[in-house]
Image (cartoon, rainbow over all chains, first blue to last red):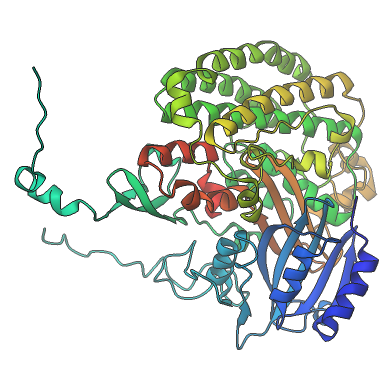
Length: 177
Length: 409
């Protein structure tokens, strides 16, 4: 049981060479940091390769690196990191894949063709972080209202909002039926 | 003698005739008792058959993840209560474990066993009500009343231990906020002695009930491949035949010392989910009994007082403890994790509850992500209800046990 991450590092390096930025390891959890260009190929390889078989996409989320301290900035080449948590039922192991996305153009290819779970997960990232997933079948807001402006989980979005509560539309007199 | 003759629908009901062959739009929710919270489904139905279903969620979006970036690690425990409000203890414990993984500290054995006992009691409270509501949605009202009585008894235990029935906020990073009361074991054993009788009674009433089976067997079935691809976890996944349970796959706390089975079924339908939940409750009873037998004495909190508060008496006469206390509670000081990131998951009643924490080394987390099981489970709902009957959608929804609090966060 368990995946041989040393061997996996070699294979990924051979196949995707310049795409790989770094590997991280913390308390037994491994992370693969890649550029966003060929992300779908990387994920497809990790899903289908018999040595990994990450058949389950546990979660898709995102981290905004805007306010990271200087000591952590080297590991964060672009503003956003889309984070995929993969799980292999066969090998009972996890892997975190981080793909870095610049602020402009804020785009990455969608993984919805690989796992159905990516559909809603990416919709949420689009909604709260404003990252466009190219090729997503149904890219709409999911948690915030459809006419909402802005992306609340970005670090430059204030905690108390931009006055939406104060400017909430309301009737000043009782409308005619 | 009764005869039948063909009726020309165009003459009898001209409006209905226009609808034949076309579909109509209708709403399920957001205010409907069978939606279990505020969520809305835009349905396109042809007669009684659902052609298309589009879930619309977010009515309860409260910005937990944004709020988490402005709260320190112990303050966020309060927010986890509100995520899944049917099993707040499981959320508290899952978050505390994630923090402890990040800080690299371990909880003493007594703390671990107490957490396991409370997590399993909370699972009982969640599952039993889930089964009761599932029966109620299909017309069996008495099962719901019985199960709510049992949950009240469980909430009495939670109140004795945590001081609250729902907003428990029981854990702290590195332990729990206080040891359990002296009569804890009596309370729990008293409950466990009577609880399996209720399970027998529910099984007697539902498991071979013709109406219940007609409404659930073969309804909204998911295959193994579909469930895995959608990232479904918990009883819904195990009902499709995948034996994935975080307690077994990646044991946390003291689950590796306890004997329990992971029940699975292969049908993947609503009935299988009900059976899995019933069997899981029996296993939870087994786990709590073992944990009570083995419950060790000793401290409940980690002795690393850079993370956990020192005992109050110590603060009064020991200089070092006073400093630790001050450093933990003052804003701008707080407990400092390493600059790194962690994903940690536990088995909540609805499935895998994960916390992904990115820390920048200060007292406040840089980013907290809650991986809610309900969110990924509900994503399968359009697939489950496709070409099914409208009444089956209600059965399917209650078997998913969607909690809007963690769905929308």
